[in-house]
Length: 388
Image (spheres, rainbow, N blue to C red):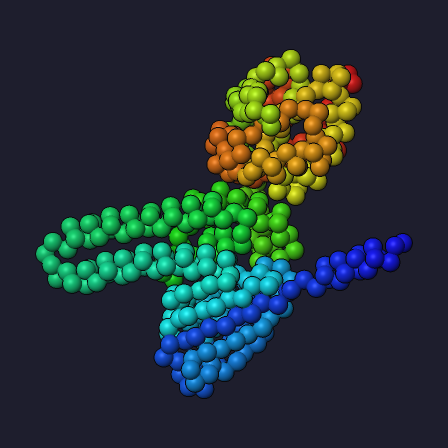
């Protein structure tokens, strides 16, 4: 090998091995207590582990260095009631400016995108909490009022409006940050002890959305695993029976879909009538979907000439990622459509999609024969249909 080429490759490998996993956390606390310690806790699935502590300087400053291989949650804590939850990533340099008695509502935080996002959420949550506290004050002032019942009715209405506002804001926040671990934190916010912004039963689809996204991205991270297990229990329900997640039921005609292909042509689902069709919902960011794709390639090669077609609908966020997923998994032989709207795709409410992958096997008239056939189950069903 050419000596210069060898040296060049050696340098490249050395640089690749020098990824900066160090997170630097520094800050200034106004009105700090002399000699006080500040702690750095790592958030595990159901516990906090103190990994470091330093004495706050006379000027209120502090500094931590921590090795972090993946995006992770940490708490910066003065005591059990005064802390800041941080989402830090390798190489970040977080700088905090906060009042000594309110770490959770910093004056400013920079250098850590995840922590900045959570700080923004906390500001909105605090506004709601302050509004609700104001209603409590009004109630206290009217305890002896002869019109107390009317006052309480008005206060209840206002409280409900405030709760609806923060609930809707939280849902928008989750939709905008589904690929970030901050969406996990948003699921469990409270406006008062045990008064949660999101209700796991009423807002179950948001728990499922976050689980579907994060479990494909961080399957080995303890807090994500905990959410995944919780969602499985929530979906199963009190009797352990998983309810149907789709508006499309077996024996009914699959709702129409009309979306563009990667080339910009619009293809309707109904245009596949005459073939047995696998209607498959997937995305390039969905690891379980990608794992199933080789099985679809096998099924298509075995049965396409016998009248089998695949109509695959993507919930991707970008056209580039969608097309790359098709190319990388060698899926270009069948029909692909998408509006590139992620979980805001028009197909999501139509089919009541709460997680992916999900699929429906349609007969030659577009009626649903079965759903969620994956792996060997799909192969057996197709063999039953085509090898009679």
